[in-house]
Length: 441
Image (cartoon, rainbow, N blue to C red):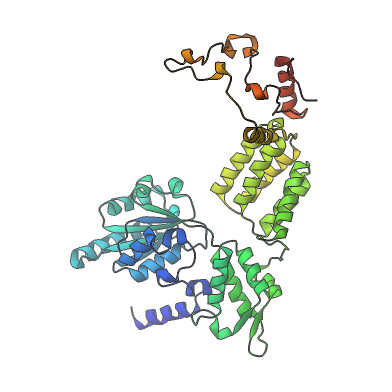
């Protein structure tokens, strides 16, 4: 490195974005992801001991994948090299491998190769790397926002330990912003004071992405005039920095439950416009789309049920798709299933389970009907088990009248189909098969 290279590097470090300057240098400085780097966890121990095998970090943007790689670079005694799959090619891999072989042969020094956005490498590029990961020439650390089981060479995945990173908690984001305005490498020189409302707003809007929050704080510091030598970042400034209006929606407060209640009641009440509005309100405020998807799945059974059995299928598929695709595209998936459920025929007949649960807890049952008991083992017949059981498929319409409920519950009805949608046909079928049993009105 010549004098010009050194000067350029110092300038880049000095002028680097706040999110880059605030990257921790040791594992103990890392915020969040305690499920993998909490003290005593496997990855924590491996980094501390400098005993790393190949691994892949998988998670959304801003959750610390590159940060963990930088921490490893600062900690390890191995030669550390970095490539970005968006711009690197096969030749770059070959150069790193050649250097790694030389280091291993001359100084017995291992090489850790960090590849950011590893899913961007095509199959040929990933295949070119595989032999050197297998023989230990390089230790691979990959980072990806995409599911590695789909987007990364299966052979590479099988030789790596996968660590999944999650969106940071609101408290983690707040801690990072507070560090940023108090540390020398951050914004201490600007003498910033930030309101609690602004902190909470930026932490909510960041939606678990530390980079978003830090970029907003930095923009506020650079564009806000100081008052008596102090820069004040209040809610108004925070909104301008992130170009997003603050909503009265506290994910831990009453308004959260009010909005989700209005959302569910709009779907139940067959109002797709209201349902989509409250969906948008939750997404805008940073609500976890997986939480919304779970509520939609519940609504599909509780409020639609067998009036349209496809609703639960679609809701379950949407929940899986939301997890697989992520934001922002997940909002389209949610809108599709929400409007389907809102406009579907309605039935809450599945709530009969609660009546059955109550009876299970309060009514003592002496015995199940003997003909329904298991008769597949030796001597079962001597106990009366299975005697008199009639196999439904041996009869016309695949139905035969016999007792199924215990004696104490013979006249109980737990499922009362409505006259809506497919349940109207179910009700018709039940009346045809059970003409003597009490039927719902």
